[in-house]
Amino acid sequence: MEVLKAANEREADGTRVMHMEVGEPGAGTPAKVLAAAARALKEDPLGYTEALGLPELRRAIAGHYRDAYGLAVPEERIAVTTGSSGGFLLTLVSAFDAGDRIGLGVPYYPAYTNMVRALNLEAVPIATTARTHFQPTPELVAQAGRLDGLLVASPANPTGSMLNDAELSALSAYCEAEGIRLISDEIYHGITYGAPAVSALAHGLNAVVLNGFSKYFCMTGWRLGWMVLPDDLLRPVERIAQNLFVSPPNISQRAAVAAFGCREELDANVAVYAENRRLLLDELPEIGIKDLAPADGAFYIFANVSHLTNDSSDWCRRLLDEAAVAITPGVDFDPERGAAYVRVSFAGSTDDVRETIRRLRDWLA
Image 1 (tube, rainbow, N blue to C red):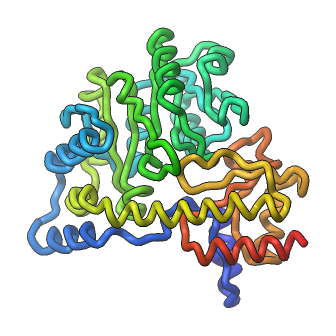
Image 2: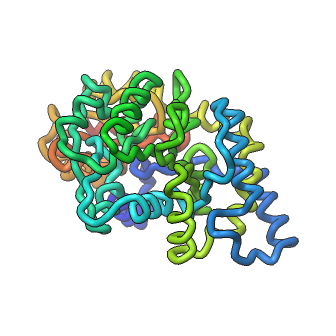
Image 3: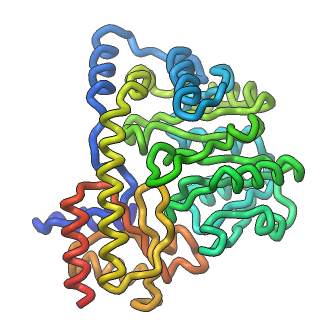
């Protein structure tokens, strides 16, 4: 967000900045979702809903698991949240006590650690590498010592790496055996470039699964997410949600019911991301940036630039100042090794990706 602020200031002088810094879909909200919102504005008083969400939306999400994954998920286990961030907060407050230790695979989405620490929990970094596909393994988790929770993301931000079915099964089994609460962030499901993403729910209903409408469904500003909860957290989450949020936004919920009928439009967006990804994976090595994380899913390239700089924050500042290209330094995602990395978001247009490559090539030359 600091990079975005600096990029906006750079644009104030009339310069066209290539925005490759923020993980937000470039496509707008689907047409059917907008139409559903317009109907709700006319026909509904839009008061509070139940704390866990509109019954029709919870049913629609349950239907999504049936249709997309072949999984029978009871709608009673689904809680609609104020963004997936609201789901993280509800998970941490309901499932853990102050001082509990939460394992996080590094690199990670930085808000994870900030929320964990804000609630007086201990964030335990688990350093991953290309050898482990930038994902935690049972062996790495065991080396972290006693844990009360483990948070995994597949596809992950910033690396785009994914856990396959066998890997997720092994982590689920390890957590079950060791009494570790598994939390699976699945917000980038639907945005993959080979095998589809696997849900932790395929390996039982004991994990807390978090997802939402911001990424695949292109509804970032509507601030709507969901959780799939194990039995023991259903009532605690409901009570806490009632007190912290009252209910998720009514208009967003009514609009989101229509999102599951927008597959054709949404998959067309993923096709654009796929072309953007192909361009970057092909062209970045040609201009000297060759060490790239897998980018199996999501819409990010996590690149090693240690041969170009030992301070990616300064490197990104100079790139913005001199070439008007905004990308994110890796220090947010990996405090120990991030000075050697940058993250490039390719969620925008293909023309912008081509222009970014051209500017980057000229700047490096």
